[in-house]
Length: 112
Length: 113
Image 1 (cartoon, rainbow over the protein chains, first blue to last red):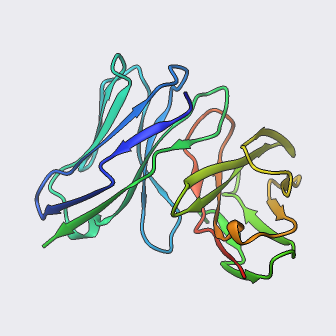
Image 2 (image 1 turned 90 degrees about the horizontal axis):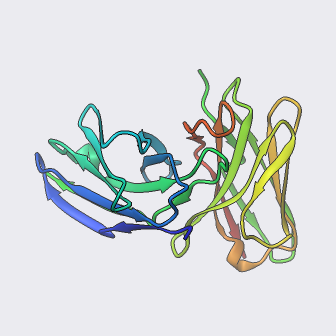
């Protein structure tokens, strides 16, 4: 019940493409869903986060889509650039507890 | 505004030794969490501190411990090191509990030989 399942494990897109990364969770108590971006040698950096009272959130080129009934959420990267090449992690938690439960990560490569 | 600072960045230790890692949160942040990152297991929660009290603990053996000081700085300790403890240890801070917005440091890379 504590797992967050992330797919795909790796993704290759061309510059300008729209990579989509999907995550699914089981624990209905989760109410905060962030996405993190990690470059080699760095810690994860918060990209965007959503709470279950909205179905979509956009920040710049990054969009989260959230489907509460299906217990799924996804990250879309518009007009992807080579600089977006990194590992992306979805996560989930709830306000009562503060432990982030992470997906296994998706390695994105954007070719020029 | 300074980010989350972790020291040291790299450590090499021998099996059986113990190690202490340090984390200075963003100024004003009172919640500090620790995570272990390995290629096989990914990012796993170790523990979380708020106001010098451990609020939450992950599924790790008692060899892993931590504490938080009155200035919100935190340390974690691993005793009797095993080869499997080799990992990137990440600290994250947040303004308060349950508000999200966790900011991670760059981590301490621990290698146990």
